[in-house]
Length: 261
Image 1: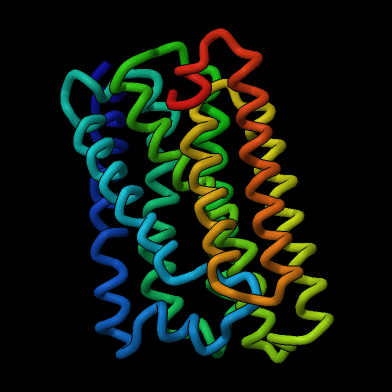
Image 2: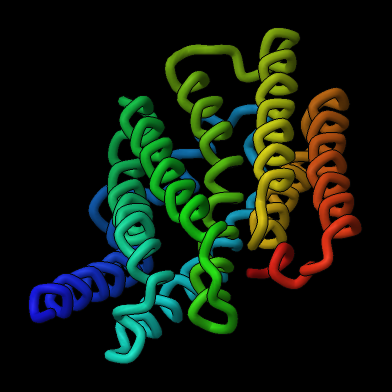
């Protein structure tokens, strides 16, 4: 019993530290590198880089992550199954975000593969938490908070990983414009749509935050004003994911759980 309490306290503390770290990571990374994530990203923009406003989604993600981190650290919450199941994967994802925010301004244009690999690790950690949430029987805040933050985070990094690969390609010398770039952009957007639709289709909870983040990013790609074929592909991908969510909601009795958690 004492060992379990210590393990729960350690996990809860790690979540809090990681949630705070990802908030301070971006300004710290800018201070260390002397340039921001946006400045490095703008130097190797691809055709699927979203419009700048899209990155404001990190505000709600960070806020929800911090709210959940504090909540799950309360003495009465540490032993709940939902927090034990999602705590370490989400702590890893938050910590990964913090490291990425330090790494990308430093080497994003010189060694772009490193932040890309790290981002895929973040996706894997968020996906692990997402999968574990699907079988959690709880309702209310113990489930709503981790479901909301996991859904938003996984949805956004799903799109961001495709953008990161495209950005890395441009940084390594791939064409940023032209027919080949447009083909690869459409393929990447189709992949995001396929993955987003698949996860919405199999989800039992928190499909709403996930789909919202994916669609938010896809529409921001369209708004960025790229070639017509890329804009059409981005809008089409957003419509497909939205339609999948609509079909799932229409055919399910527990719609609140599916949409929110």
